[in-house]
Length: 485
Image (cartoon, rainbow, N blue to C red; front, side, top):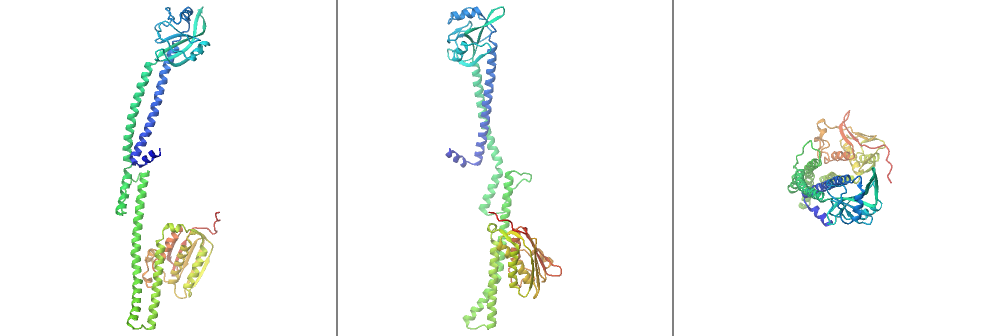
């Protein structure tokens, strides 16, 4: 059985569908055919039973019955009264099983134990119907009833220890049932073959979209061409259409991801080129000085070393930002937990005050708990505060507030031009006025991605009175949810 199941699973899906359809139709046709045969058999037997019951005489001549029982087992010459109205076998039986032929009958019917029992205690209100055989082995339908005789003046009596057996041949009935069985078998066979052919046709038609999907997948696997799309009818909403739409959505997402990846690589290469070129130039100056024996003035050497250090710091920051952007969603999802947003903001504020000791940073932070990755969320808030520190004038003021999940950071710097606001969250985008300042152009992109993954949103706008207002909204609650055991 297991081997057959394994072999079935290796067949093409069309063959499996055709076999399943043919099997289902074969079962249904077989059930209908068998039911039909038994219904017809029951109807035919009902007709035979009705004929046998209608053949029972209301009363038989007592003298004729007595003569038949006396001359038994020879056939009497006198008539019992059946005449030519009944075409079958008639005989009397005694309680000991002795059969006595009546006139018009030339064949004995085999007596059963139930017939003997009935003859021993005949009941005029009952009769026994059964199948049996005659002495030659031919199938017959038998009715056993009580023997009722006329005693005169319309009186009737039941002859004790005697029963009347009436039988008809079943040859014609069996021939009809056999012909019907053969006909049903032929029709069932044709139906199963037709169902198999129809199942194969339906499977081919139904699986045609799957063939297209398979060809598209094989084409993508072979050529890595993600521009392939499977045409789908807009009105259709079946499983194949949903699968096709899912495939188109997947390839579209993969194509978009590839474009973003290529753009990230290109932008990263461009951004890395500048600090690497500057770093190489400064190192070559220091190396040449050592090789030629021409010392660089101490002030210039110190400036070169400071420049090398700053470029290495910028390079390390850029690599860290690229690593943050390259992390998959699965890696982030594993680290998501309930985070006290106010504690994250306080930690970011401590780092911001170290980076801008000359600035005045005020904060009004209220409790708020969110679901996020702690380190990523802190890095995003640090990036927002770093921008505020970077663009604030010396001795300036930065105002930070957290109320019911809304974090606002307001600086009093030059602000952002209106035409630059749509681009502030783009990767590697930097304002023309800020390109001389340190940074990779990835900070706000990381902020936007982190906040969106936490289910919130972030905006940057020009503040009233000058400066920039950054707003972060995160869903959560003012109290921490209870810990699950």
